[in-house]
Image 1 (tube, protein in one colour):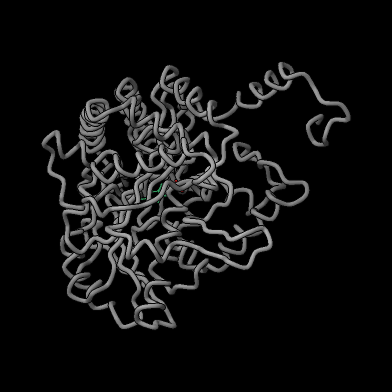
Image 2 (cartoon, rainbow, N blue to C red; image 1 turned 90 degrees about the vertical axis):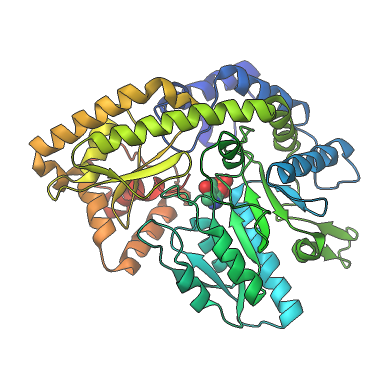
Length: 472
Ligand SMILES: *Cc1c(COP(=O)(O)O)cnc(C)c1O
């Protein structure tokens, strides 16, 4: 392969661009709305607009806010606009980050350091409902905070009484999601807020996926439980501009109720030979392109744009949920407030992962989830046009699996089923780690995960399919 080593002589721009294009040919077909995660695409015109906005500032660096005043201004305005839709007052403050994960990691770091400084907490713990995004586990691991996991109730919402009982003198933060990614339901933020106030513990609301959609869903008159700064105990909120904010990838916001809290996020070093250094987030160099595109997306969208997209999303989701529930053997989990939902099989012999396999055969990219085993959908405005096709294919897939019950023990379904049931999670972890070593090792390249019949690749490879389908 030519591109494996650096070419002796640089190549023509056009030749390189042509080759880039061919590499994407086998990527998931998001432009025709065949994907149900990962991409929040609104069509070529919008994509082109974001590209132009980003390109103008692609070389600019947001590292030093005194240098590129343009970028600082975009950031400040994105923060103000976001604080406005999430009911922050004039004290609300925050930064633009590289994505939801950075926003989550920063909150963990902030609250750990705040508890250390104000309460001398040495063995920090955080309260995490099981529906919390995996980024919070990552934050707990990275920053040495013990995750105290709380189950969800039968509606997939954080169990408030269990949260209350879990708070102790080492608790540095409580987490609630609005909504949680796996089931799309909003945690009881008001109740969590009461606990937070009563015990004087920070409450972060992970609105990474809901932050730019729920406010407009509420405006439309749908029932949305209070989740933003209107809830007194909420101390911070994360919202991903690169999800339903429809900006280019690489943009999220973390907002704090006030600077006394956010201060604990800021890094200052006075000893570096390169100079006195201060930084508000995880990154050093911060890409001007995603900062500019975030600002541009919000300006172009406006409240009316976000609202009309929200309307489309909500009616499409309602049609889908109704349609899925109308298929015998399937059931949507809980009562999703927004645009994400999951559904499981309620028929013993109908393997939901086998249904997923059949949907893939029909050209859809669908995430598998576990605990309980279910399939997932994240709805965007582009899905309106494919809703009927999706439901027809789903009914067809269910009928096919029902007529061929052996499918539930074959192919992808077998792997997912096995992995989700294996009691030895350490073994699963070891195998996933092995897969990561292969992918990122010196010979590393994307495993051909579509090749299910390959025996030579073994566990790690097959696991990859399940593993890579988690997330957003
Ligand atoms: C997407 C998401 C995240 C992580 O965001 P990334 O941009 O993928 O890093 C965190 N929490 C929730 C609820 C999300 O939906």
